Length: 213
Ligand SMILES: C[S@@+](CC[C@H](N)C(=O)[O-])C[C@H]1O[C@@H](n2cnc3c(N)ncnc32)[C@H](O)[C@@H]1O
Image (cartoon, rainbow, N blue to C red; front, top):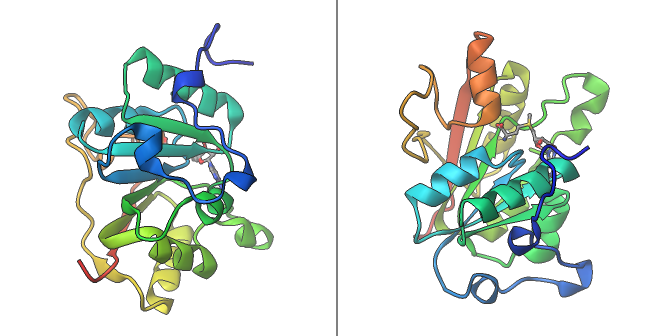
């Protein structure tokens, strides 16, 4: 069921077939502004805030849940966010298929599904092959930002980041000015962050930069 009736997502939905290969984002956005991408963009709350704060940057949100992707794309249309497109798809595949080398200034991943059961750990997004692809698509100086409430997944993320030597670990800095009235403890201002703050959960954040800027 749609989260809102009469969605009109098409103008802000980026729908490409695998055959399209690596994309030319200058053609898609009609300019050569820097590009940032969010994985698991949900209803688009973070995309809305950051695209308003950085109007000279383009943003892609990738979301696996179709109803959220359509809702977020419609939300970007309603709020006239011409610097945002939303993709309905699986992120690691989409990055591998469609994102050119050295093309991203930032990759945001906030509260990714933790897959807590041991037999499901292989479904976690953050794995060494994925991080290798993140290194490929980040521009020199580009930054990966991660936040999670899940201590075990955070330990796994840190182990993956330490195992590879292509990205430099750096201190996490908030990517966007938080909205007035954001609850205390907010770091990135997403829906899950707000929900988890209300539940009293604590968060872990990590960031890594591709050297060579
Ligand atoms: C826990 S929610 C967090 C949503 C949002 N980032 C927030 O903080 O409010 C995780 C989201 O990531 C999406 N997701 C999970 N795995 C994904 C994948 N491989 N590719 C794209 N989206 C994914 C889920 O559908 C879900 O909307």
